[in-house]
Length: 126
Length: 430
Ligand SMILES: Cc1cc2nc3c(=O)[nH]c(=O)nc-3n(C[C@H](O)[C@H](O)[C@H](O)COP(=O)(O)OP(=O)(O)OC[C@H]3O[C@@H](n4cnc5c(N)ncnc54)[C@H](O)[C@@H]3O)c2cc1C
Ligand code: SF4
Image (tube, rainbow over all chains, first blue to last red; front, side, top):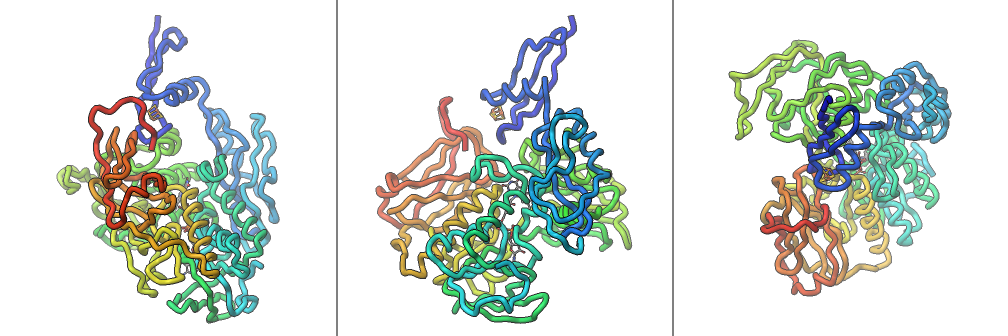
């Protein structure tokens, strides 16, 4: 029997409880350290299926600014977070753009779109 | 009308708002809702939105819209409302002086100087970042030292990087968010240094910005000197003792070409000073009444120009009130004069607004000196509320209702935040 304890910092509120998830043979046997239900739920979520929203910028030509802010329409599994950023590095959009326009659809097959988070009118890009 | 050419402006407006950030936009909407027909917002930037346009991360609007938006999305929602109200916006135009007679001298990037007048003025000028001078950081004067917000603008709007290897001083949310931002853009982030023994930002940002990217956080440690002739070459960091004095015997030199200072914001007070408004030496902004009126009739203020907010939602709430009050004042609708002065007591650093009235409901915003677990906030003898915790980095927001205020005869009301004895488990989160 192998037993492991993974620790997490709860992000639910400023108290920042130190959470522990104990596993025996890949089965969760205990969650400790929380002071409220939110912490317990967070520990389980973060342990079993951690997800992150991606917010970044992509290049845009002939826009008012040189960068267009974008986000994923939902949080993506944490292990794919970096790959999503990497895939966006080579994207170049062209103004004008409307808030919500799809920048990359179904990015990396994750079932999530990357969309613009603002209108971008044409301009000199600086 | 949105324009960058002042010749499109009227000579006389009912309400003029200086600054088109979230505060200015909400104030203009408030004024318009109160019945002001001609409302103008002036901003020196090329577009409305203020600091939100560069805050591309999520975390805005949970209270106001019930969903988490990015900064630009939050700004765009308000801009749409501003346009729907027929409010004018003039960009690329700096408000040089605002006068007590409610005339304003504007400087346009395209058309030079112009003077306009208003029935009421709302100052919504936001904040500026504390710089190297504020912490008297010794050393040479090389390039490569930026405030975090400037670097944020470089990266998120202008599309350029501040350098290749960065040290970040300050663990507030701006410092943490920039650590992730730079790391993602290929800058090597050596670490975040924090003089206090605890981080100042949200735990969410500690996890999502530092832990996820293996960026170390050094607590009770600060930057004591910068080195380099033309470009920054290194910084000296040292741990500090409990009096926050650096322990130089344990100092270390860290090579880097970029230092980001994320060491706090202070209200932009130039217009307020020009008006000779009475100021709060703690918040750095003007004294305001319960209607967000300053010490001069018909001059209102709101947003980060009054006190530093951690949530934009509260900026919006406070600024709608300021705008409504400014609009109401044009029609002679003024509520009873405030009869209560708010006096920060034990573990309370500041309180905004500075005065309130016993006949109405108010939302007050407080800052505390030190963290406390399981505590209670007391307003004189009239009202006490349990708080689960307080932290210096987090505003304490309390709603005061006439139910309690009616018991108070008026005068000075002292506010204390005290530890609680024999605390039970049913307390309310702050
Ligand atoms: C990096 C960072 C991250 C943040 N993260 C969050 C978050 O996750 N969630 C959240 O809720 N809040 C967050 N905030 C806080 C929030 O963004 C601010 O509280 C809010 O933007 C303040 O609004 P404001 O309108 O008072 O100021 P600003 O947005 O600064 O707007 C002030 C405007 O006034 C203009 N101005 C000033 N002086 C003049 C003049 N003399 N003439 C003409 N124009 C003038 C400026 O150009 C500017 O556009 C963050 C802030 C920063 C800096
Ligand atoms: S467990 Fe509950 S009390 Fe503890 S940090 Fe998380 S949300 Fe806050």
